[in-house]
Image 1: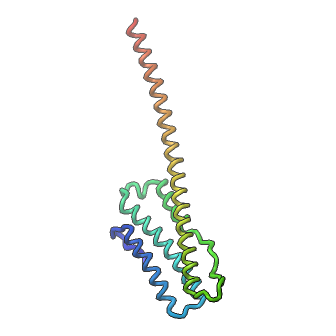
Image 2: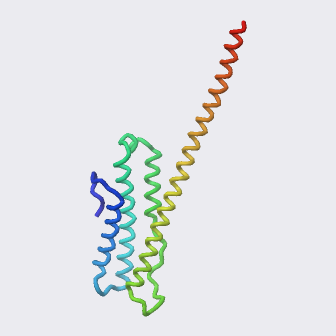
Image 3: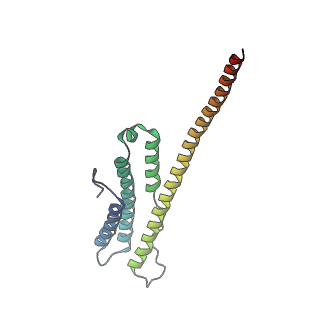
Length: 170
């Protein structure tokens, strides 16, 4: 149930896959679901959704980056693994709780599903924040080196100018 390799992917394909996960959930539950069955199927769906997101990101990277960068860049490999770890970390969501005995199991499932989606959103935000911090650190290091080189070049130009100025005066 993952994305076929080599097939162009866009956000619509991810959205479709997510809708399919909900359809599969409803089909598995049938007409008379039990609480324990609901928990197991929701946990499976959450794991599937996070895997779909990670596969989508991986496929997007493979389709949009030159091959030379995909394999040879340790920073890219670290970023890919870091994003996957952050998105797939286990959810700390609560089990279905009976807060209102008159509430249907489907209403409780909706509440739990909303918690799952909020958790996935938070994990994606965490991954994005981590990536931004990583990029800033990496780019700051490069900027610092380039600034140092510019300083050396400026000093060197001044020294060469003074040297030739002295030679011209002689």
